[in-house]
Length: 216
Image 1: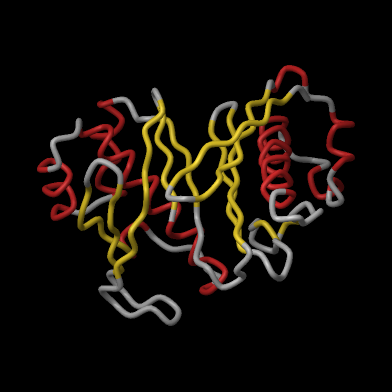
Image 2: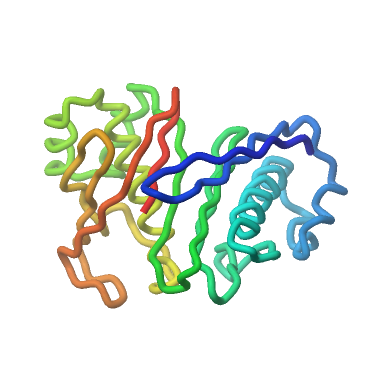
């Protein structure tokens, strides 16, 4: 599969980005993955996205002088080397990964295409509550952008906390409480692992054309 690797910095971290061409994918490309057998019956879209994400992760690990490819955990989560914490995301023909040499660091990254206005209005009740909606409306950002940011930030937070809770979290597990030009804050609405209710998490965010990237 034809890919291009690039990097950019967000919140002081190097984010490794892979742009890939699904039309150039061949099943033999998966043989690069130690766990390729687990993807044998996956849909083509799943195969290309997974491969691109693992290529991004391999670059992130190489930058830390680690030669490894994250495997797949029982819930589909990436399995990083024991001394590393990292996160992977993909959307469209882009995949990204970030890794740090601190296995206890809560780290999560998410990439989302900005929702169309009509779709944002349709799905808002599954993503935010009335209090969050008021905060997003007060932010001054177009509602579709603000809702996409809320969705993406919660996904990034849940990825970051998954290694501690080993369970998927609902969107009402955290509430967006602040949003400015470069950062946003999510606050837990219920206890999560060792984190009590009202624990705040601040994420960096970046808009790139028609997509947003959030990073905890």
